[in-house]
Image (cartoon, rainbow, N blue to C red; front, side):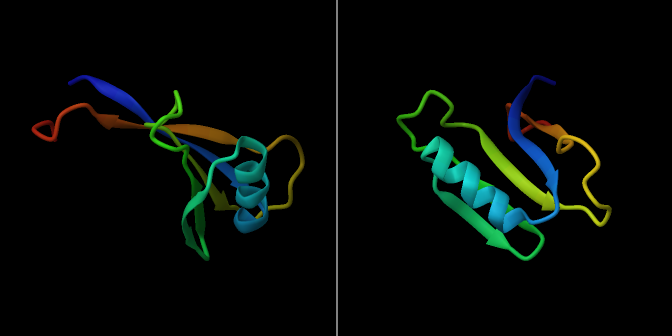
Length: 80
């Protein structure tokens, strides 16, 4: 099964604040916001148009740089 990069997920103390900050820095709008998740995405004409950055809360206090991980998705709807 071929995969593609779907999103970069950042753990943080305050997803709304950090998501809005990165949205302004990258000129990407907030495209989803819930108490436990904020997502920003570029416009369709941006070179990164298929990528989202998602911010999620963690309960522990920050001790170093924000942890990140990547989410992969199938390239085909036929793949499980």
